[in-house]
Every structure is written in structure tokens, then in C-alpha cells.
Image (tube, rainbow, N blue to C red; front, side):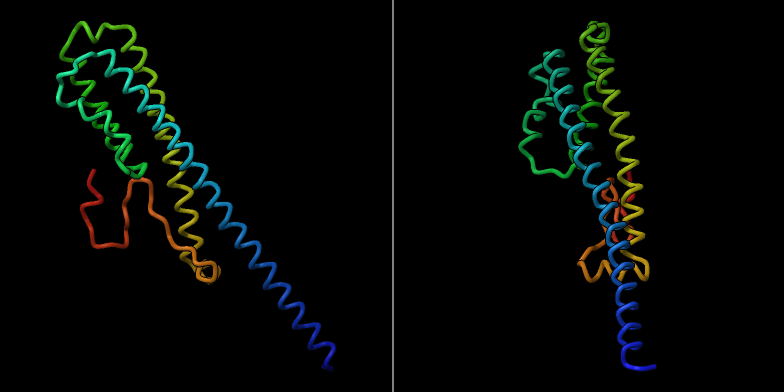
Length: 178
């Protein structure tokens, strides 16, 4: 082999490495885009759910109820989407208990309609959370397995947590409780 062939071989090898790197990096970025899009949708849906729950609370009109007094302060707290979703679920359960204890509220058409809308939002949230977690699985597989892990290390990408906040790699076993 003369010098030109060696240089040509090196160029071909470097070109193949560059093509592999860019295609793998694009796969990782595609997963990141899916994750970011899902996070945005979840956030929007949770804000809609918050507004619907606020309307139900107004319709219930029980200002002395200590279980619902703190609802307005929920937006002031700095919560992750997961924590916000959990707190909204807690308030939703409190509202259902109040409605079930009061026949007049249970027959109120506005409350029934708002509860139906909340149920629809819940279904959408659950669907997006599943999509989000599936995207996280794909992303984590890419950034944790060889040879794509090398690209993740170069670009300083790390594994991400699932929506439910669980981290399978830590010693906190309590995060697996529901």
C-alpha cells in the first residue's frame, strides 16, 4: 500500500465513524424531542386539570373545608410534574369524597360535567405518561448501552427518570411505593 491508499483508507474510516456518530446522535436527539414534547403536553394537561378542580371547588362552595383550603396555594409551590400530578390526585379524591357524602352535590349537573372533563383529562394524562415513559426507556437504552454510550458520554447525556420519579439505580426503595 502506498501513502495515498493509506490516507484514503483513513478518510473512509473517519467518514464511516462520522456517519455512525451523527446517525446515533440523531436517534438520541429524537428520543429527547419525544420526551420534551411529552413533558410539555403533561404540563398543559395538568394545568387544565388544576383549573377544572378549582371550578369544582367553587361549585362545591365549602370555604370552611380544611381539606380544600390549601388548594389555591398549590400553584405557588415549586413542584415537579410528578409531584403536581400526585397533589392534584389527592385533591380530586377529597372532592369525590365530599361529593359522595352530599346527595345535592352528587346531582349537580355542573359538578357532573366538570368531573367528566377531569376524567377525560386523566385519561389523556395517563396516555401521555405511558408515551413519556416509553420514550424514557428508549432514551435510557441508547445512553446506557455500548457503543451508543460512548456518544452519550461525549455529549454529556445521562439517563433520565421515569415520570413516576422512580430511580432503579438508587438505594431508596420507598420510591417504588404508590
